[in-house]
Image 1 (cartoon, chains in turn orange, purple):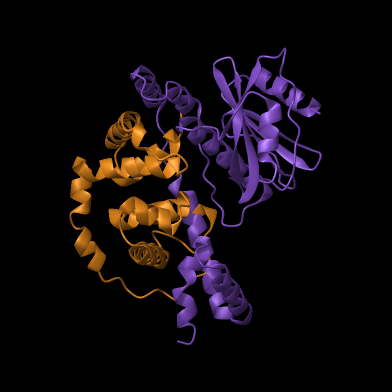
Image 2 (cartoon, rainbow over the protein chains, first blue to last red; image 1 turned 180 degrees about the horizontal axis):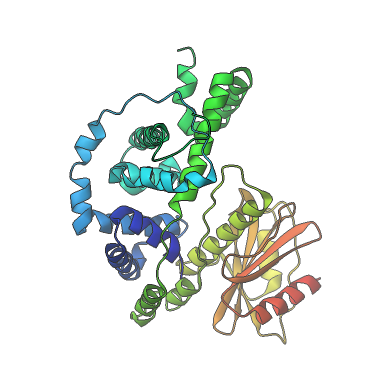
Length: 165
Length: 237
């Protein structure tokens, strides 16, 4: 099945629910089959499928809820970048996942598309229908928020014990 | 802070989005600035950690079956064979690291090759030169590619030559040949050698180097067909 794994993973990250992720992926394949004539040969098939999924998400129940405070989130003031280095290890995977989970969807999607899906800024901008500059500032904010979450977690011994301070 | 200018470019740097000149200047700066070096390392590490952590949810067997059924039961649209191509297409891989090992690089090439195979079959014009005659297809590539290759005599085999087109693999020009075998299509990519072969993601396929060229074969046809076509191509004079 082409792209089922990545599409499902992304859908679950967006919706945070197995049931909704399944609905979303199913809808995506249905739309892709129906609208295949609109696919431009020579363009990125993978990005096309992701775009269908993301557009379907926007009009879904949790999508409408998640993106409503988008403007507010855009303006949200995040603290300046922490000078601390993170020294992440493999054992921090759960912590990074928790950090991604608590991000507003507008930030979660760009950081996933950029870091996991390895989409270019240009492809992400086209997919979201926003200028590249907006993609860049969202990625930067998303990373700062993840970093802050991790730094805060490291400081609380119950959440994360560092070997030396 | 004196390094503000560089710190602003940090995201674009780890994402490989700086233009070549900018990237070179950035690298030069890193060599002379410990603070920015540490920040760049940290940013790269965070990116890698996010890429790893993001691989989390997998569809259940039940759901997979449901989607497979959904795709196959649909009335076939414009291209009767595209749902079959879709079903057969690769489960694509997630390249997690920033620094690609040879293995990851070859996986990525297979992913690229699989993507090209699927999108090509789905396109309205899968081949640019439509011919079953190898004496038409081979000259068509001359002047378009920085190398030449030989095509096999297919008479007496199950294979037919559908045609060919230009492709880009790892940013280098390659020949993309499309063969038919019974109801299946087989893509063969030929590029300059120097890249590792590895294994295809989920299609049947193979890869080898011959005469300074790297060959990739990708298809949903059986491994036996792959082996047969490989034999024919290797024997081509």
